[in-house]
Image 1 (cartoon, rainbow, N blue to C red):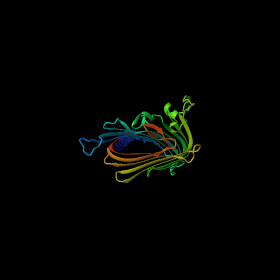
Image 2 (cartoon, rainbow, N blue to C red; image 1 turned 90 degrees about the vertical axis):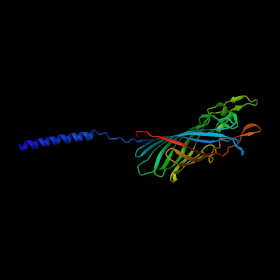
Image 3 (spheres, rainbow, N blue to C red; image 1 turned 135 degrees about the vertical axis):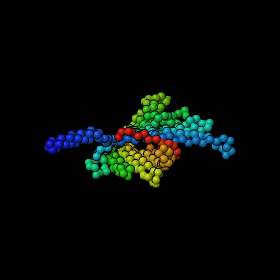
Image 4 (cartoon, helix red, strand yellow; image 1 turned 180 degrees about the horizontal axis):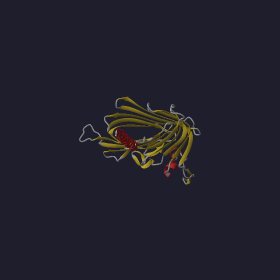
Length: 320
C-alpha cells in the first residue's frame, strides 16, 4: 500500500511541476526594440501692452511654435539617426502688419557603421535638407519677396567619419566629399541670380534671352559638430556648428552656420530659452533699401537672437 501512495505522490508532483513550467513558458517576454523616438512640441509667447503710457511705446505680441522629432535605430555596431526641426514665429505690433520672425524646416539623417563596439568612430553617410514654410521679406517692403519655400532649399549629401561620445553628448563629423545642392524654385529669384545660382541673360533692350538657373551644385568638404552639456542643475547649453567649403568655386571661402542655445527648465512643461544663430554664406547677397528702392549688395554676416519663455510637451510612445 505504501508503494501505491509513493507512486501517486510522484505522479502528482510531476504533473504540478509540468504545469508550472508551462505557465512560466507562457509568460510573454518583452522584446527590446532597436528604435528610440523623441517628440517635442513647444510654444513661446511674448506680450507687451501700453495704455496711456507717458513714456511711450508700441504694444506688441509675438509667438513661436516649434517642434523637434527624432528617430534613432541602434545596434551594436551601427546607428541610424533621423531628426526633424521645425520653427515658425510671428510678431504683431500696433499699427504694423503681421511679420514673420522665424521660419525653419530642417531634416537630417545620418547612418554610421563601426568595426567593433569599443570604437567611437563610425564610417558615416549624412543627408541634410533645409528650407522654409512661407515667403520672406525685407520689412517694411512686403511687395517683393526675397525668399520663398524651396527658394532657397539646400541639400547636403556626403560620406565621411563621425566621432561620437553618447555619454558626453558630443559629436563631430568630418566629410571630405559632400555634394551641396542649392535650389531656387522661383523664376523671379532665379532670374536675379539669388543664392548663388546663375542669373538670367538679357539683351541690350532688356529682353530675356535665357532664364536663370534654378539649381546649383557644389562639391566640397563639410565639418559638423554638436555638443550638449548641463552647465548646472536644470540649465543646459547646446551648440551646433557646420562649416562647408567648395573645392571648385573659391576654395577656402567657408559657409558658416552656428547655433547656440541655452535652456532653463522650471518643470517638465515650462522652459525659458536664449539662443543665437550666425550664418555666413558668400553666395547669399544682402538686400538694402536705398532711396526707396530695394537693391542687392554683397554678402554679410547674418545674426539672429532669440529669447522666450514657453511650454514644451513631449509625446512618449507606449512601445519602444
